[in-house]
Image 1 (cartoon, rainbow, N blue to C red):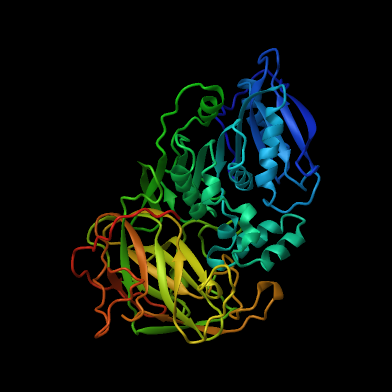
Image 2 (cartoon, rainbow, N blue to C red):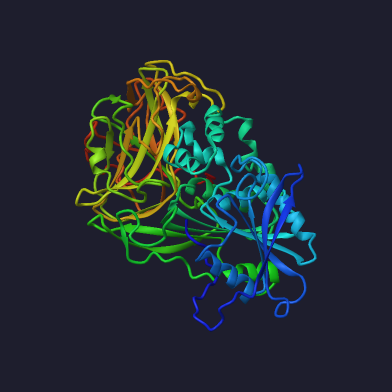
Length: 576
């Protein structure tokens, strides 16, 4: 987790003692549970009277070990802020039971109301934190008191269900590994018992009605390979369109992973990856002290250009208002393989391994997928090399017609960029679990052998694809440990079903048009025109019209450019 450094200047000076003083307080919650809270107050001789407050709530320990202690020194000693750091419920010396995030929509606002009643608070509160400390901020926003003026949130999500179980599949390397870092065996069991998207998850999902109550200004940062990239970009655009007018929300979206903003990122060595030179202290000074007017665009994002060697990268920062940019044209790529139906073996004992991506506990970032693409249990479909540069900026989606030989199966889609030397660099991926294709809130077995459309959300991308490079789609039934291997039978995870082998049949015929929809911002991807519909039939009404390109399992077949003009679908905004 990156440490938030708010305009911090590392200075060696003669001062050896901290001027700020700490007081420990047990803050009562509405149900009587008390949360241990540290209050750091600056020297009253230098900063007299009530002061603005910056709040941090955390499951990782309310203390500030080095180098985080420098943050308190900067905020309190140098700038006169009161810093409040609190152990969330059930952690550290706080009372209650730790059920991660499920009480923060109540405990966060209750803590803020307690702060605003203290004689040392001048009525202005800000919050900060990254990852779990960012999630607790987002969940607290709808019911926060008016005294919460702003929140600085890094690498977080306001939709825990979709973050931990996208498409209904359990994110093992994120969810299980994170929970195993806490003494919370009951949480792991409870979450697995609620694998469907039910009302159980309501306390950790900020919905549209709740967003309309948000009044604080939110400054977000995230990365394209962050574990919460898809949900945080969606949250930003939701806040811009749904929350109180004039809130002034901001998103900075870089080519980063969850824990690293330094090059190399994954297997790409960036020439210029530094974030915009914002003075983040200016954000708090503006919203808590009324000083200055930071003239930041609503959205800044980094467009990556991968070099011909598949190892070096450069790029540039762009500006906008919403993510995905509404200017990008949604362009379908129809997928055709060597045969109309490609059947892959799905062996839970030999899953396709995770190589890079938006991970927490295993290697992350853009990494070469060539070895995975060559496996016999992977279908790859690759374009011809581009004849000119083009840009993809937004959120790709996939609609794959597939069938299982058993009552359940996953469809995993990876989107990669293939350099001229053959390196296949991961751009984004997604998953959809068969049991939740019909309804994400109800576990519904698949009918063996019957094809159904699997709809997948892929994470955000912003790339300039150079001439000579290709795009590749890789489809499989596993990606482990990023997604926990499906047992391939539609039985509850809580029952620990015995995994079985199955087959995944992927349909690419005109009657079952599988597609990947690309957000084309400029240029012309080398996508051949769509196949004609079957005689006497129209194209599947659920699929867009556009282009196709194909290959067989474990190989990449390039197809020539045809048509020369991309069908321009109607432009529309997509959030998430």
